[in-house]
Image 1 (cartoon, rainbow, N blue to C red):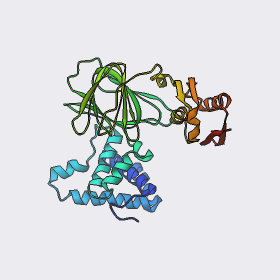
Image 2: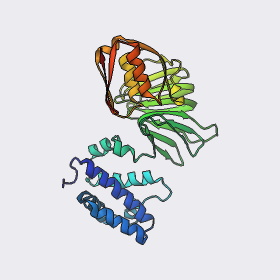
Image 3: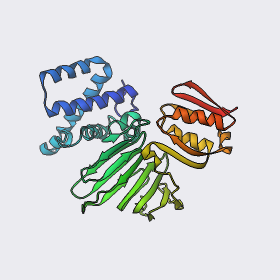
Image 4: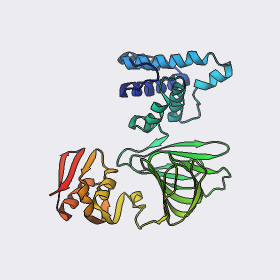
Length: 323
């Protein structure tokens, strides 16, 4: 078994997540049936036993802290969502070196780590979440958020994917923020979408305005009808939102004169598996409205509209190349 702080295997990652879940459940109240299930899990595979040992190691280290601080460090918040309680345990494990800081950051954005988020969607799924303040968040395909409402602020952390937010009409004096990997967004009573891409954030404002702050304190206000892409170092030029940009809310993809390669990349966001696209397909442009609940139909349409072959090697592997 690997030493503490080393890169974790997928089996170890899952075992630690399961161990955190068992810790939350057993701390909430242990019954003979629950204890028996935990013991069965513990004996199922070596990784499970290893993961539980890491929790015990953490508890032993916490005993060296002052009593009240040690008690609060690992005791789950009974009022917190289960996913948040599990994350707190896993963060504590990262703190003692069981999970390196870099591994913890990578894990948060892995498929397994995203399932620890407060709210998430699978590929092809769109879901609406009503927040405690009355605001609404709609998660696009393969998206995940953490929600942290405190007495002084309301904060959403966008882990992956895209969300549409309609802030509450209630007069809540706490500021509302959306945190992405590149910056901090502060809506000023509005409706807007935020997409977390690999190396940048894309903001589209449909009503009112949103202020964006970068880590180096650069700021800009994005008004209604405008779209802003930014990295953690700079803002790109504001552009106008095109018609149909929010069509994904109705599970539609509306595009106008888009390079075929870009269209297929967008379609891939809503389809499990891989769509492999040859770069030269960018010379073709496509327009139309497509049903995101039937991506097979959209791919077949592409094969009929352009001189390309669409090969379904399996349900999860599609290849699109010149005919």
